[in-house]
Amino acid sequence: QSTSPTRRGALIVVEGLDRAGKSSQCEMLRDSLSRQGHVVKYIRFPDRTTPIGKLIDSYLRGSSHQDDHSIHLLFSANRWEISKSIEEDIANGTMVIVDRYSYSGVVYSAAKANPTLSLEWAWRPEIGLPRPDICLFLRISPEEAAKRGGFGAERYENGEMQTRVRELFQTIFEKQQDVSIIDAGKSIEEVSQEIQGAVAGCIARLDVTGALRKLG
Ligand code: NYM
Ligand code: MG
Image 1 (cartoon, protein in one colour):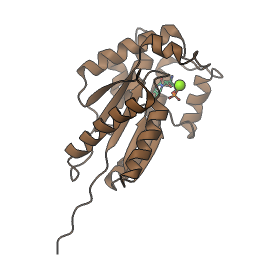
Image 2 (cartoon, helix red, strand yellow; image 1 turned 180 degrees about the vertical axis):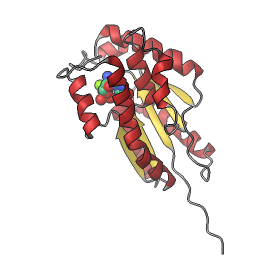
Image 3 (cartoon, helix red, strand yellow; image 1 turned 90 degrees about the vertical axis):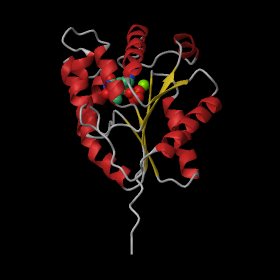
Image 4 (tube, rainbow, N blue to C red; image 1 turned 180 degrees about the horizontal axis):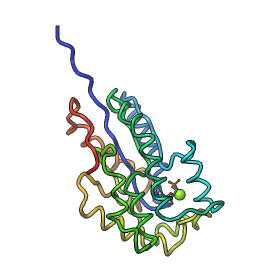
């Protein structure tokens, strides 16, 4: 008697600037995949609940200072500490939706224009983490982002930083495979439909008996 191998889940990453609508879109995607009968988990980085996450949270709120390299490595460590559980979930067939990942990690750090913190340097600690099966980049113009209200009070939420982050996202996603660029300036419903279409295509193409790949 043959036992069919477990179909693995997909690792779905949603990236974009602040105000692009990532969190609402992740929730809508979670609900639509659940309705289709998938087991779904929605997580976000930084995960501010762990001890490392609490250090990151205090840095982002401006209540503590960190060296640029140190905080970069903490963001990366925060992904590494969750990576085992992501791999287990995927192996068990769960669809894992991730709000921000290594791409935010490298662009926000490199946007600081610290001479010893290049994109290349920033990418190194990400090597070996689970590789997304699909990365959805929610692209939004500065004008549209501005219409959605002012910046929040956290570190990085200012025009100068967001402009550099926008340029660097562009730079890394030109070279990256498996990225779907989504025009996030459209209505919430239209954006959600586009995301669902891209994710359905990814799931259809997935080698469900193969293993999750790793970032290289
Ligand atoms: N951020 C997020 C980083 O600088 N590096 C990272 O690795 C990640 C995952 O944290 N402005 C920044 C981008 C955001 C900030 O994220 C908080 P959010 O999604 O606004 O909670
Ligand atoms: Mg934010």
